[in-house]
Image 1 (cartoon, rainbow, N blue to C red):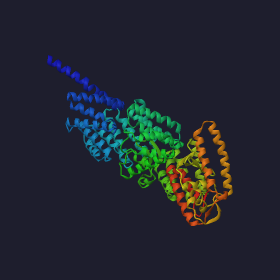
Image 2: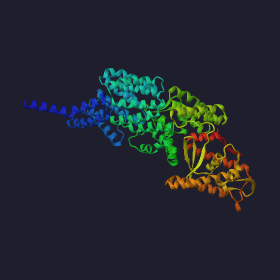
Image 3: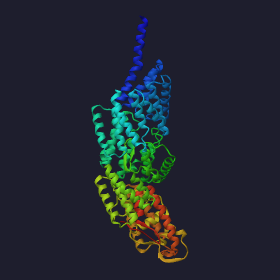
Image 4: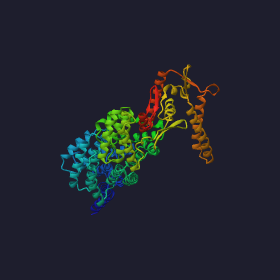
Length: 625
């Protein structure tokens, strides 16, 4: 009698210590999609199962600790602990059981995610299909799908998602159907399928009837990307914040990275991406990022360039290029990252017909064709840029991505102007239409209207280059001074020898003088008028305690004074330059091209604009459209 009572008490204790948290963890994970709550419950269950020596319970808990997706444990310590427990539990159960198959698939998927090689998990999927256990098949289908998020496996992913939807009717787990429908919707978005939005209606209806936190988080990410596509940028910003909140509540480690990408996309179209520099700098150093997540480097480089932080922009781009060229696994962030590097156009070319989508659809930058066109434009290939950008406009219209279409149309106008000349009617029409579309969408002007000049002005020790709402800060150089002189004289032919013998290169001027002054009378009068204006501005700014702006104005004033002084010879006479036209043509052309490359690095759109309107040779000019 005592023995029976003891056995009953032991069974009750076991159920309380092991089975209760284990069942609650499985319910939280598979029914509710609550990754955070399930991890805590499985942690408790594993410790208790280990204490009781229950191998099967250890295996169920270790399997649950893996979560729904792959690489849910982001830190090295957490990932290593989960992997050790899964291997320990696998050794404690029947190796031929369905539970062992599920554990082996989890280990293979985690290894495949790190290495970028899905072969092992796909082999286990074939084994799972031969079993009679629908839960094992569903588990391995989901894991295999998550190991195939790169741009090379779109068709296979869609097949796996469709198969998982079918298996969901047999598993008895309520979370399998929303997971399968979610994968199916994501795959259609990644492929740029015109019916992708339809698939969201079915998933949304299912979740409205019975919520699943993890699936709802990804659904909200897709809804955020769609709001951007539709040009509802303010709505997209609010949805991104809600998406981040839902991801945090669900315990999904991707929440912070996705929010940064979503907000960065909105800010990019608004012309405010420089505001993202600090959060992207922090994100790039986060241990929660996947080892194959390079998209943060692309975003950081763009934000740093827009903010005038040339050192960070160049260093981050160099890091990104090295990783792309090192044949890193083509994960769900690879295509998004590759769009940030002009030198990656040969890597992007096979995916020209795809949209640039991050992970499962968290953010979309429109057609990859756009980035191939911008790369060609940046590298001076006007014909290639026109080819890609024409197709990018059509692709973005087909996607219903209105901001991306406006941006591609603007770049198409710049490419046409570069190829056919600034007066080309088609270029002007494309630029004007892009400007109207951008204004309608509340974007930063995607295109500069004809007749609106570029400004090149002193900014501290460097130069501020601006066109409309776009602006970038570039370090001082001989070429930037030449550009400033040309932009200050729009529509005028300036001999290269005048630029070469000016204050920027006074020390190199040959001795034999010519009749051409370094600064003509009109230029001197313009400089002196500007000095008078600056004197008034400085006095007003200092009186208002706006010392930062006063400092910038003083820097410009000091430069103008130095220019006038350097242009004067003995007794105040205007200094003359050497008459070596060919030497000047070569030196000035090289210096301006170097300056344009620096502007390209800071803002490719401003660089393309100047390439289309600045002409070098024996006579140099800036001819705005």
